[in-house]
Image 1: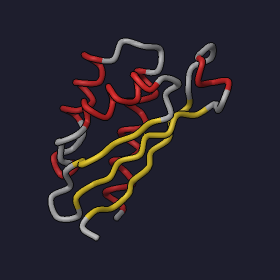
Image 2: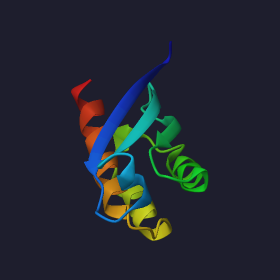
Image 3: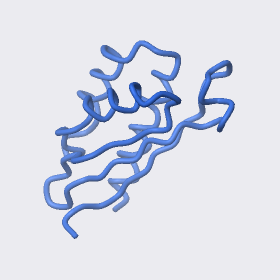
Image 4: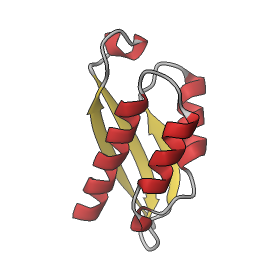
Length: 100
């Protein structure tokens, strides 16, 4: 297999719909082994639309380049309550990738 599966986690803010399911947000990334490019992404946001938006936003970025640019795109594009949790989960995913 030419990809690896990386997961990052972050605590959700109180009062979110997804918080009724879990107190944490999980962001999973399928990453190309050689180049570190995100080829697929998923997260535990409550709505399919939110999950699709995050997936489309993150695909194509290389974790070898760090996460500053995709984190900035998340801040710019995702204006929901889970924005900080998404950023933290992305940074945690990157940390897990670097440990690999």
